[in-house]
Length: 373
Image (cartoon, rainbow, N blue to C red; front, top):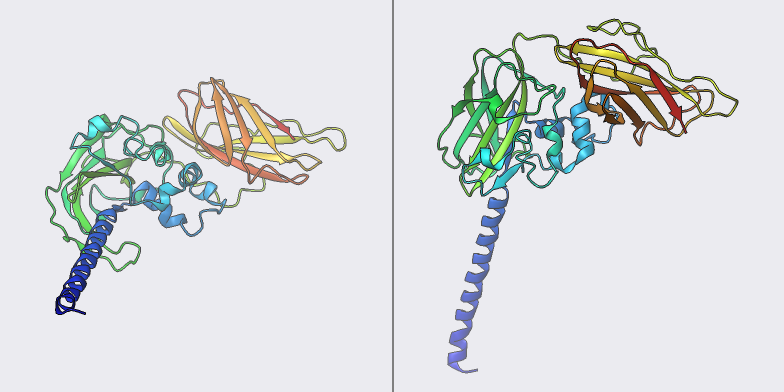
């Protein structure tokens, strides 16, 4: 081999080594950009909270009664919780109100299609108790910092139990301005593995349930992250209580915090072998403009593989959200059908489903009918 060939070989090796190092650096950079994610961890955002509470047990049907808003979100699209740190839009260029329509603020204008759409639904989301001055904390997974973080609190009079969030419902209470990359409290939790950024927030004059809404404008690129967190300020009216983990063996004859409403029953008898069912209705909680209800379905003398409950409201009530049943509304008429896990009932067996609704004036219990297959 010539001396020239020997001289060229180290040069080729050095060139390949430099190219390989460049690829590694580029890959690392792209990985860091891709992982520039985060969310509000205190008070927890809706999807982070659902993942935190149920990520290791997301198929547990108890979620339907213990945490019904998370239940409906998991059923709608479980990837919204697995990707709790990825609720962002690109290319907004600061025009957040132009990019996100009213009623879609919690989903970032349904970014990613309908993945996060269930986060916009009003209802009894788990709320964090806070004072009128509190510490807000967000996790910055890749330590990219922020061009700004804007923190809003819903105005007094807005009701997150029954209303979708609009821009007009919000008041800006804090703008952090620029936050340099890496600034924040280092987290040892391997799931978080970045830094947490905190800000003091003051929201005087608020009582009861509200939403804290935040926009994180990440500084590494034009990525805008959006977080809805449910909170409870001191004071306020009576709120719905979380339904019991195990339904009572008999429905209450006088639901708490509601007008007298005796349970009503559908057909319970039939020829031997006929599949029948009965249904009872109870209001388990009531507050100004809204209520929480529960229906118990019981199979007759024969096992059933599915059931449908129908009723008609006489006073203009409307159902906004449900769990444990698929509910459709047609004017004042309501139809509730079993979901996959609770359609089959043994003879005399029962199950329950629940819902959140709105009312105005009178909230009388309707008469129910139940049919089985």
